[in-house]
Length: 88
Image (cartoon, rainbow, N blue to C red; front, top):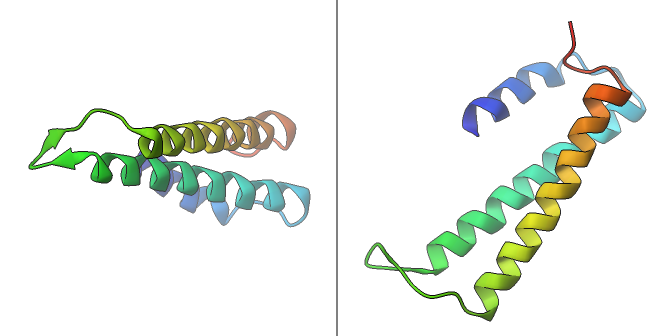
């Protein structure tokens, strides 16, 4: 995931102004949100490096992470297939 983030940051300099750049910021923000929610869920559910059973908070964090990941993926697809970003 870190390599994909770095590649996206390099590609960001080549995105034209307008709708494509707006979609880029949405894609980046949603993917960062998903990563943050999943990392928070992981850290909250560890006790001495042993996983704890899920509770309501962890399930809500997972659901929020999934929704952010799905929406971010949709924006990523729009960038590639709709705006032609990342294609040679």
